[in-house]
Amino acid sequence: MKKLLNKSFTDHLSQSCSYKTYEPLLPLIEGINFINASLLHANGLATIDKIYIDIDKILRSYDERKLIHIILHELAHYYRIQRKGKEWYYNYVLHTDKNEYVEQTIFEENFADRWATLKYNELYNDNLSVEYRDFSDGMFLRTMIEGTYNHLRGNVENEIELEEATKRYILDVRQ
Ligand SMILES: [Zn+2]
Image (cartoon, rainbow, N blue to C red; front, side):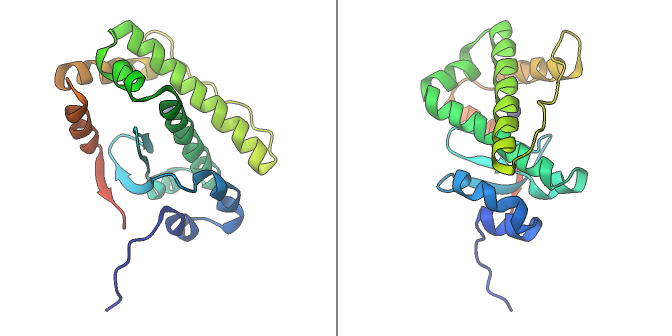
C-alpha cells in the first residue's frame, strides 16, 4: 500500500492544472497557509490565518484561469485582513450593524475582484477587465450578504463561535 503523505497546496495545484498555469503564482502563495478543501456554498474562503480553496469544484464548473483568479481574489481578502489587523476584522464581522456590514462587504468584494484582475493581468501578461457584479438592492449578491449578516448576528457572538461557524463550511480537507 502506498504511504499517505500530506500534500501541499502546490502539490494539489500541480496535479490539477498545467505548470504554465500555476508557475507564475508560486512566489505569491509561498509561506501562506493555503488548503485545498471541499467547501459548502463557496469556492474559496479567506480567514484570519488561512485560505481555503475548493480546487476540484472550481475546475468542475470553470477552467484553470478562473481557478487562478479565485486564488488571487482570496489572497486579496487575506492581505486586507493581515494589513488591517485582527481587531478590525472581528469588529467588521461581529459588531457592525447591518448597513455597515453590507457596505463593508461590498467594498471588500469589489476590492478583491479589482486586485485579483490587476494581479492576474500582471502575472499572465493578459488584459482582462474587472468582472461586473451587481450588488444593488434586491439583487442576489446583496441578498446573500444580508443573509450572511443575519446568520452571523443570530448565531455568532465571539471569535470562538466565529471559528466554529466557519468550520461548518469546510466539509473536507484534502490531504
Ligand atoms: Zn470575496
